[in-house]
Image 1: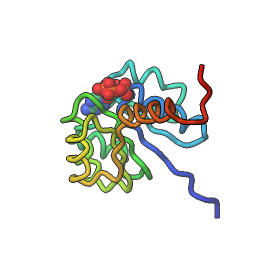
Image 2 (image 1 turned 45 degrees about the vertical axis):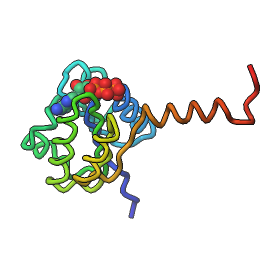
Image 3 (image 1 turned 30 degrees about the vertical axis):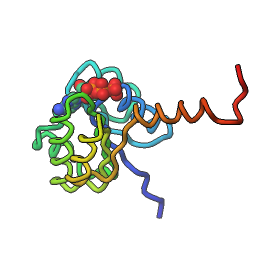
Length: 143
Ligand code: ATP
């Protein structure tokens, strides 16, 4: 039997979410991209499998999209911490198997862990650390 290819949904199409969505699509995965801003959705229409405009804090809308059938859902809503938390709760209630959430700060991250996010990521913090590591890495040439 052919191996099931993972299906992904990305909620929030800012710089982080859209780059996750684009990369997964380029790698040949099925991607559903969701944002409540129609312009953001429009930018990805020709890139991902499905791009829809919806409010992820609307449980019925998420149910109607069949969100629980996706193997992994990435919540990439940054600034609106309330929307990020509510969305994560709804996804959890709907039975999504794996939920990955971008956190804005440590406290936001703590709440996300408590309500059952499977993985919490801090892109700005982690990229800052990587750049700093790189700067003091012994094997980079002095420019
Ligand atoms: P980035 O740093 O990745 O650019 P950000 O941290 O600035 O993102 P925002 O711009 O606040 O994050 O949010 C990312 C996207 O999430 C935006 O395009 C916004 O429209 C979308 N978004 C926010 N709330 C909701 C919601 N309730 N439902 C769907 N999309 C939402």
